[in-house]
Length: 314
Image (cartoon, rainbow, N blue to C red; front, top):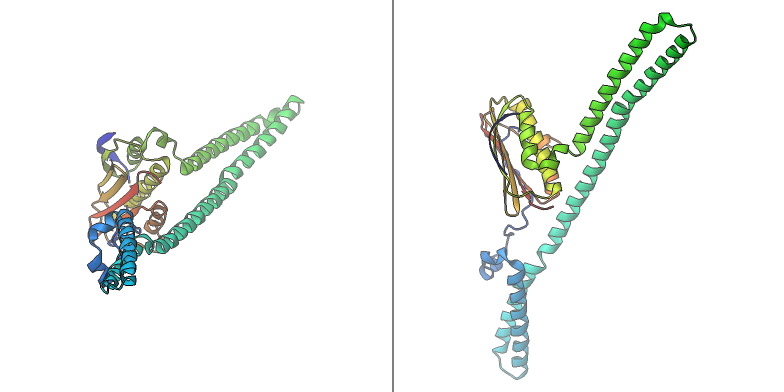
């Protein structure tokens, strides 16, 4: 799906670049590993590490056999084999504890975030829609009693009061329905069923700020990724309208093989900061749960650009 154009809608302003952990990046290496391991090896660490493991074992045992037969240079082969095994360990085993710790932390954040969202949904239902429906039931109950009195011949004078109660109950029911619809949309926007491109177009058109759209989504990512991308774009556009003082914003979404990129930019005042428990920090936490990346560029005076990169599948 390709969409280009201008819509109406709502990013935050800021000058801090924040990235989620990039596990494919080359890790910090000691001097000896910089000498022994070429940077290209980190592009395919398992394949390179497997070759080093096989070669190291072969050379090491060959050196042991040569030493056993009195060839002194077999010790050199043992040393070379040990270096090869060290490289294999560096590529195959050493990164695993760090990765496991990161995954444990990410999972804990995801669980906590899900629990908090469920609590918030329950609270909103209890204090909002549920209270509205209780009030509707009470008003309709009073109206029923009044109508009963009229049927018994005692209540012609109560007709106007009955009408007021019914009108109030009807208004309350409509308000409750609207609130329930908003809550459902907050859990999963129905427009996403038609695809992320249409959802973003609708999102941009709902706002008060002119938004230029540039959408290139030839394939659909997974449903979880679409949901994350949608809510991130929604919060960024809302922040543009609230905080940036911008007159114009741009929403871009592109999907290449294995990667979904969403970018929101504006011509506002800039100077955004990623603060603890702030909007951008919350987005970064959500994106980390799928090994995504958040980048913010917002020098004082603007312009501001926030780029989100997500894998195609969670």
